[in-house]
Length: 171
Image 1 (cartoon, rainbow, N blue to C red):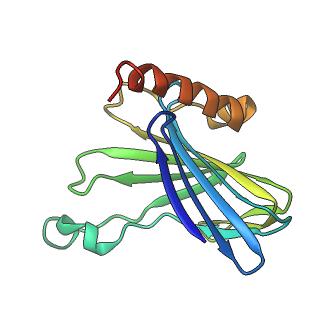
Image 2 (tube, rainbow, N blue to C red):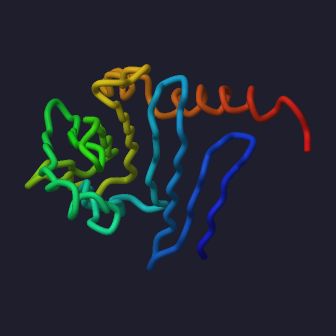
């Protein structure tokens, strides 16, 4: 019971699977109107969503870190519900910030030792914004405003925006 799907008409990617006695769904999309990547993790049974989220840069993806410069540590913080990671590009030419908000329904969310831990949630929405600090043409949104707008409205706006591009012609 494992399925992956990318709906080309809506721009929404879905993964669904069964594990033990529960059926899980993960849904993802990019929203140009809200300038975020969003997702929802859910299960058909209560209190089944538990995970730890962390941001790491694996050495195998950093060819310059060994020969051209020393990799600087990531700056991680958690303030007002927003998990923020400040990084540099591989060659150290640009600084960028990744901001993430996890919104569990039920259960708990805590920040501990640079990680977000969600336990026993019924579902969890998340929103990711990324901004290059010294060059961005589009500023990252205030993620708390995104949260207030709500997952379903953000998804609806993203699907409508995607449809205006994808439905211009038929194949």
